[in-house]
Every structure is written in structure tokens, then in C-alpha cells.
Amino acid sequence: MARDKFIWCRNCSAIHHVTPFDRVAVYAVLSDAVEEIATYDWRAFMQQHANHKLEPLEAAGEKYFANGSALDPMSVGYIEVTNGHDRFLLRRSRKSIEEPLAYELMKGRIVATGLSLEVQENEIKKEIKYHFTWSPAMPLNDDRIDLFIGLLKELVKGIDPNTVQITEYSYTDESVSYGSLDPDVIEALMMKCAAYFLPVELAAIRRFVESHRESCDVMTLLILRQSAIEQPVY
Ligand SMILES: [Zn+2]
Figure 1 (spheres, rainbow, N blue to C red):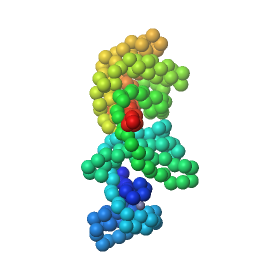
Figure 2 (cartoon, protein in one colour):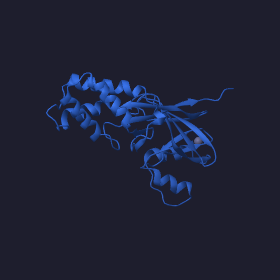
Figure 3 (spheres, rainbow, N blue to C red):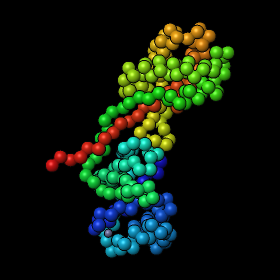
Figure 4 (cartoon, protein in one colour):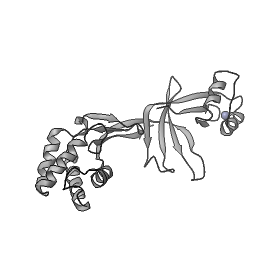
């Protein structure tokens, strides 16, 4: 995953986010090269801060934190960046939906606060409904599927996230990985299900669970890395 890059004007504290379109130009200038292919935003920034002290910043790995959904255009995000020596925190926000994202430097850092587990509820539902047809008992109707997912969620609540074995990392979200349900959990799930499902349904459920627990398949758990902003106390 390419790391986000920024230019920081140390005179004005202004931050420009380098997009893929102007990345070439930025490198050209910061490395004193002659070649220059610029886009409008970048050119405007460079003109506004001509003769100022500019410093390139790069995202420092996986340190990223967002308030709310990453898909929500108004959500505030934080990203840790480095100039190669020191670390800084950037706050990303938008004043209104029409305006571009604005970045500002702030004090603080992102700290890990632990892991949480989530069941892939919607994916399980879809898979059972539309794809899993190995048995006359499948697909289960919606109420039966919800019942199954409810029992699974209840069980997952009792699992310590640190004990879950990671099966795959998410390509799109660095704070997400996938983990396997271990055999003990599957047995416990089947025991719970036995109280509500017919034997023919139980057999189908077991086959469903067993055949969807690899890599990032629907019966793996989402392991979410939680983080928070820690601000210095004066
Ligand atoms: Zn400036």
C-alpha cells in the first residue's frame, strides 16, 4: 500500500496532501530536479509558499485513526506522519461537503487501545441465502439464519481477541485482519445450534461452517485494531 505523502510549509504551518497526480512534480522540486509536471492544486500551493521552508512528510506506517466510518466524507481522521526524524500528527477534516479535505498539524499521537472481534454478519447471510446449496436444508429462511448468526455472536463475545489466529490481512483497511474460529469454538457453536435446529439443518450448518473458515471467508472473524488519540497534558 502506497503511503500518503504531504508537503508542510514550516513558515505558514500549511499542509498540502500530495495526490497521485502531483506526486511526480513534488519529487522533482524537492530533489531539485528540473522536470516538472504539476497539477493545479499543487501549483497553487507552491506559488503561495514560494521561498518558504517546505518539508516533505510521509505517513508513518499503519498509524491511522478515524472517527466514524472511513466512507463518511465528513468524518475526521488522524494520521501519523514523519519527516524522517520526528513524528507528527495530522488531523484531516472537511468544513463542508463541497470543500476538499483540509489537513492541520497537531500535538499528540495515535495509541493502540486493543483489539475487538466482529462476526461477518451480512456476508454470512448472503452466502447462506444465495450460494450455499449443499443440502436440502439450505438455504435456511431469514429467521433461521438470524438465529444462527445470533448464536455465533453470543459465542464470539466470550473470545479473547488476542487468542484468535490470524488467517489473512485486509488489503483495503490496515486496521482489519481476519481470524479463524478454532475447533473448540465450532463445537460450542454446534452444541448451541443443536437446541434450535433439526438434525438435517445441523449437518448443513456444520458443512457451511467448515467450508467457509479459510483466509477471509465469511466464517472467519474480523479482528479490528482499536486506537485513540492521546494528547499531551500541560
Ligand atoms: Zn508558507
